[in-house]
Amino acid sequence: MGLTKSEIFTDRQNKLAQMMKALAHPARIAIIQYLIKTQACVCGDLVEELGLAQATISQHLKELKSAGLIQGTIDGTSVCYCIDPKVWKQYKEAFDTFFVAYKNKDNCC
Amino acid sequence: MGLTKSEIFTDRQNKLAQMMKALAHPARIAIIQYLIKTQACVCGDLVEELGLAQATISQHLKELKSAGLIQGTIDGTSVCYCIDPKVWKQYKEAFDTFFVAYKNKDNCC
DNA sequence: CAGATTAATCGTAATATTGCGATACAATAT
DNA sequence: ATATTGTATCGCAATATTACGATTAATCTG
Image (cartoon, rainbow over the protein chains, first blue to last red):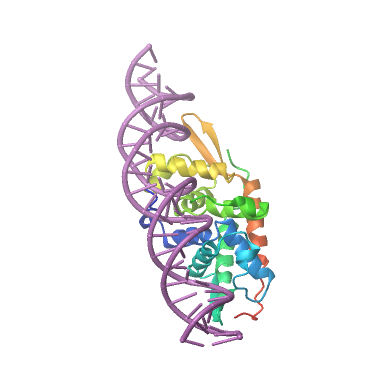
């Protein structure tokens, strides 16, 4: 089917899965890390930095944007991207909460 | 294509993306959370707990297992699953490292 | 205005994922 | 031994994802 049955899960579960999915590709990880490294915003040198076609990069940027993780503002003919600090914090907290929930109890199989 | 070009990324980037992908589905999030809640290990009542077919649950368990996040030990006719504390810690640390790398600098576009 | 540059979008091909019925495969129970 | 129970696996259909060439749209430059 390829179609996730999201009706049967809670909102939080669906959202967290969506967040994971947004980062579930090495290109998108690489884009985020490059944006972190260059501090200020970067545009289409991502195409050079990573070895992917312009259309492909643009598609990954679109996904990161629709996930809310990055913003893009037009700067002349190019577009300047950067991480959205607010959404980043939300992601960080959501992930933290998820991972903190488990404590090793050693009472396992 | 549907085929990720993992050659052009670093090992860390590929691994982190793989980790994200393992959790990029609400059913797998729900399975993990149920395993956390029930502390001790659980078997096939996941089929009842979530509203998915047995074959589907089994497939998600397989993915979580191949990601290393859970272990399954045979217990009579049923199988007892639990979180692998060691791998959980690795995930937690990898995610922490990723999210800590960014500091809001307000020098953005 | 004509050309150049940059990025988004369209269309398409290849592959991956999700879900499930059917079946096979244990291990127990009778 | 045979039935029963709990899981894994197979095979399939539907949908999603990834990648990219080609095109379009928008802005800048001469």
